[in-house]
Structure formats: C-alpha cells, structure tokens
Image (cartoon, rainbow, N blue to C red; front, side, top):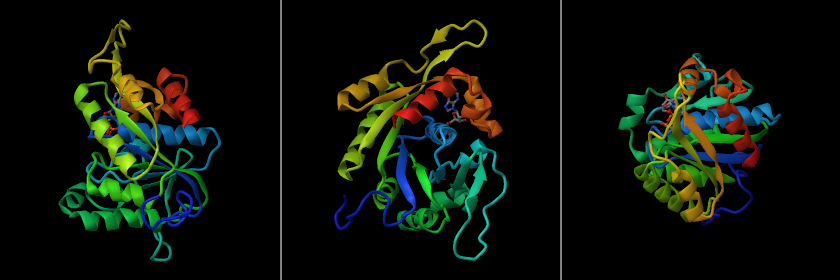
Length: 259
Ligand code: ADP
C-alpha cells in the first residue's frame, strides 16, 4: 500500500465497498467509458451490487451512455444520492460541473472535486465500484487511484502502436502505486462490415494480446468496432442490456467473470 496507508483495499474512504476496480487508458477516445459502463452492467446482471463512478473530467460520457438526464440530489445538503439506472448506482463529475469548467481547474481543485464524488456519495453497500478514470497518467489519475485503494485496474487500448505505448505508461503508473493490473481489453480491434461481414483490422490487430504477453498480465478480450456500440452509447442503453445476445455483450460478460 502507499506510504502511511494500511488496511485492506477501499477501507478508509469506502468502507462499504468490497472492490474498487479502476478502468484506465493511456489516452482519451479508446473506449474507456464504453468498457466501464458495459463491465459495470455485466457485473450487475450477474447479481452483484455495482456502482459506477465517472471521474473523466475531460469528457464525462457516462450520463449520456447510461441515459441519465436528471441531476443527483442532496437531501441533507452534505451527501449526494447516486442516480440509479440499469441496475447500477451511478455518479459522474459531469453531473456536477460543466466539462469546459473542469478543464481549466488546476490539479488540487480537480482532485478535491473527484474526492468529493468518492467520499460524499451515499454508495451504500457495493460488491464493486467501477471507477472510470481520467485518461492518461497525470497527477489527477495517479492520486485518485491511490486514494481509493483499488483492488485492481483494467486497461483499455486500441491495437495501434501509439495506443500501446500509452498502455505501457499506464502499467508503469499502476506499478508505482502497487495496484495490480487485472488485465487488458482491446477495443475497436476490428471492423465487421454489417453488409457483407468482411472483417477489416482498421487499427491494426493483436496489439492488446502482445502487450498482455509482454507484461504477463491477463488478456480480458477484444471488442470489435461496431456501429451497435456507438449507437448504444448514444442511446443510453449499454449493449449488455440492449443487445444481450450480441458477440460484444458476450465479450463484456466474459470479462466481468474474469476480473
Ligand atoms: P473514452 O472513454 O476512452 O474517451 P468512449 O468510451 O467515450 O472513449 O468512446 C468514444 C466514442 O467511441 C463513443 O462515441 C463510443 O460510443 C465510441 N466507441 C467506443 N468503443 C466503440 C466500439 N467498439 N465500436 C464503436 N464505437 C465505439
């Protein structure tokens, strides 16, 4: 554990949460939020009590992806009630601040706002809290990862070399704070043409596998580049719920079983 922090994962700040699982990526736009939302939903469908916390202040997309348009309320003026949707308890930095506002905040202020989402939300008892981290390996992601005493981190990448170099940095960041990397998810691994079923590896292929081998960490699966996923994201119904029999939904469920 980081210096001066004993105890078991999640204990100090989130005593009622059994496992905090971080979802990280070396850069934005690789599908970190898509994986967070579907992983959380898949775990909930298995019968677990699941919370989803969107800390990605660069582009908080969880409200859109879960179809939540209302804002959370605070009956006592101190704590916030999480929103509830798709069997999940949901909180997002996007409910509290406008994205352009968060972007001009400096590190300590951002950290304060994110800690508020961890500490002052009435999560109740949870088996899992899925934490959608801000992209990259900056100070905010690092200090947030440390404070919640995560059980582990899932890394999302696309198969390209540039995205992979970012995974290497993210892995090094989690190593530094002694958070085990539970596995790598390769997103947008190939494009399957909806008309002719021809498979095109738009962003190259196999990168996630190679990175997993390089670090001897599990490969959790690949998610194709699929119009359904983008549409599901925009419609606020995760594919795990909206298209439960699709290969994507099955891949997310398999991941949920393997973490
Ligand atoms: P990040 O959280 O890494 O910034 P998002 O999950 O927000 O990335 O994804 C960025 C955009 O790409 C969203 O519009 C999302 O719906 C879309 N997207 C993500 N993964 C896929 C996929 N496998 N197939 C199609 N669209 C995807």
